[in-house]
Each structure stands twice: as C-alpha cells, then as structure tokens.
Figure 1 (cartoon, protein in one colour):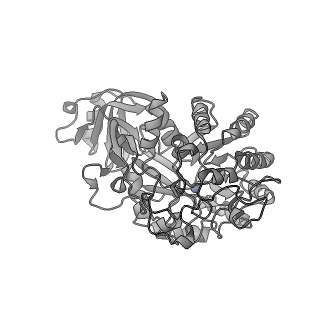
Figure 2 (cartoon, protein in one colour):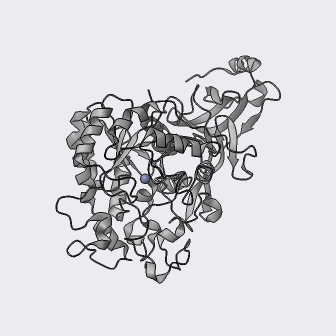
Figure 3 (spheres, rainbow, N blue to C red):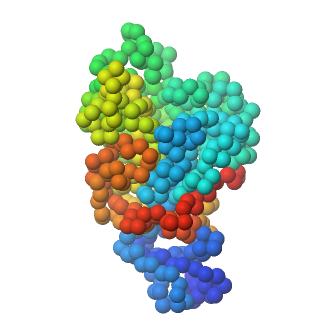
Length: 502
Ligand SMILES: [Zn+2]
C-alpha cells in the first residue's frame, strides 16, 4: 500500500497518462476512509492510493478526475460461484447476459461452475470448448472451475495447469446426467491427486445418510416410506425432504478423508444448515484447512414466508427457516474465525418453463397442468441473482449492524483468495487491477425485469425493495457500466482468467 504525497503523483503523471477517482468514502485496508485512486488506463492497474482527497489541481491539467463523494468506492466484487451454462444450455444463461448482469451489480470477476453447460468442465478438452464459447462475450473477467466426477482423476492435474481456479464435486445427484456424484472412493483418489497442487477442492455438501426419510431428487419416483410427506406444492414438504442432516453427513464424509491431503484447501459451497457450523469449527480448530461459503438467499429469505407453489425459491440445499438464517448471520459476526468466509450468488438460472411456476407468480410462463404447476420436486432447483448480491446483502446486513467493510471482506477479498486471485483482485491497492464499484449505500430500488439483466427474468427477489445501488462499475481502469448510461459502447472487454494458480 503506497500513501504517496500529491507531488509524487505529479511525477508519475509525467511519464504516463492517468485518471483519478476520489471519494470521501472508500474501503481501503478494511476501513472506510476518504481516498484518491490513481489509475493507469494503459495497464488497467492502480498506480497510487492516497487515504485523503487529493484535489484535482494537484494533477496535470486535463487529467480525468471524478469525485464520487459521498458514494463509496469498493473493490469490484468477485462472485466465486456462478453458472453461465454456455455452451450447451445457452438458453438458460450465457457469457454475454450473465456477465452483463454481473457488471450491473458491481461484480467485476465471476468464476463459472463446471456443470450445467454441455460439455461439463471435467476435462481439458471440455475446458477448451468452454473457453472458445466465451471468447469476446464477457463484460467482466471470467475464471473457470473444473469438475470432479467419477473417473476423471487423470484430468485433474492437467486442469490445474490449464488454469482452473478449483474443483467442484457433488455428493448427491447434481440434477444433470452429465455430472454424476462422487463416492468416498472417488474423493480419496481426487485428494491423492490434488494433495500438493495449488488449488481448492470444493463440494456440494448434501449426501443421503444411510437411513434417510428422503431419497433426495429421486423422491418423486419413490414409494413409501421414502416418498414426500405432504402436498408437493408446499415448500415445507420440499424442505422436509432435504433435512440439515444431508449437509452434516456430507461434511463428515469430506472430513473423514481430509487426512489424505492435509495441505489441500477444502471448501463447502453454498452452506445452508447451521447444524454444520460446529463440525466445520471443530475441524478448523484441528488444523483442517476447510472453509465455507453461503449465499444471499440463505441470508435474506426464509421458509416460513415462501408461498405454496412459488418454485422460484427452490434450490439445493434448501432455504431453511428464520432461525437458521439468524444462525448463519451469527456465525458471520466472528470476522476472524468464522468458518463462513465468503458470500457468493450461486446464480443458477434456467428457462422459466422449467420452474413450473403457477400463473399467479411473477416470471411465470404458461405451464400445462400435466406438468403440475408449483411442484417443488419436479421444478428445476436454482436461484437467479447474479448482480443483485451486494444490494440483497446490504439490505439485511445493515439492519443487523454489519458494515460495508464486512461485505467487502465476504464478496471481494475472501472470494478472490478462495480462487487464487488475491494478488490481483478484490482489494483497492497499488498494483491491483483497477476494478471498482461506485456504491450508493442509501439509494433503494425495486427489483424488476429492467434491473435483472440475466437472460431469464425469473427470481424470488422480483418486486422486493433493495437498499444500495451500484452507480458505476470499472473493470481494469475502464468504465464498463453506469446505471444512467448503460454499457460501454465498445462492447465487452472482459478477460478469461486462465493463468494457473500459484
Ligand atoms: Zn451452484
């Protein structure tokens, strides 16, 4: 962190063109402070950071200089869990629309999940297909995860070298046939392969305990006693079919093999159940490098308020009750030793017809009665929210006495670290990419199709009033989106982040 004087600014300005952004409030070094950020448009890097407002007169005349006071300058968000679905299910989402939605909400980096595109990112050849599909379509920077499926162990090290940011595997049915779940034997092999690699092994941590009163997604074809225990369009029936024990059992399974790769960072994606927190705390206390992420929907929505048939709320693991939501927030009050380090969207869209929405739910398209509108078991599971995350979080975080610095820690700094980009992204500091979100923390807006830039306008947040508006988004020193004027006219300038982790 440099804290030069204004005179050194003028010196550096003599050598190269600069632009300057200032505000009375910016999140620097985990504190809110007045700041002046000097950027090189040529390299897209931050040249200088001053913890004060240096006046425009201190810079050479003609230097572009914008004072955003009192809005807050934040590092661009790193959303480390997004499903962009291209190629193969591009009608669900795509690099173009998904990254536009990200940019709208101050997200300057997204990491694409290895499943729901066809092919899945489970081999180097498949990664190349995905990279080819993404070229020229990304409005923000995009990295990729690799997939862990039965039998692809020999692809894992080559995928690390090809630049994937981590791996994800499922311990329960993933919902798509081309991405099968792994068993304990596959986890053991993967841990042995990845033990000394610079990567992270991540898991969808739901698993059927040996004696379960549900069979997960197979529930709809099951006979008693495994069949659902109530009407299929009642959220409670769905919630009861995926109890917290699915999550705790999966986490115990992962931990039981952690000794095979004691240095390998392990990560639980989209943690929902508070019952898992003591297990994670205990493992971390013993030195197991395991972390968890949670999502805005687990922190802002609650089972009690979900109406019959409103399948916009279906995701796995499920949104649980209000007490569970409160428990997740409590864990996040322990900034230094919380096991929940990050908050990510898990943006997982589909076409509206697959949500089987009844006619009275916003976003509904006509669902034939033969398809059973409002059936939580047959509807696609996944919630769309990329780009809305900071506003969803801020709306609730503020009422719970969190600060904007906490949001930056969860959504910028720690997500960048999780995916090995913390030398480049997630922090406003000298040498980092000039990725900046200009945030009006007081303004409010109503979520409606015009503020949901993802492809399919179907989200449980539609109609909700959110606090906090991203006014401008900057990617590597370029203003790529403003709320008033829309997207930069030159088209998408996002890069694919394929430099291997170190
Ligand atoms: Zn996901």
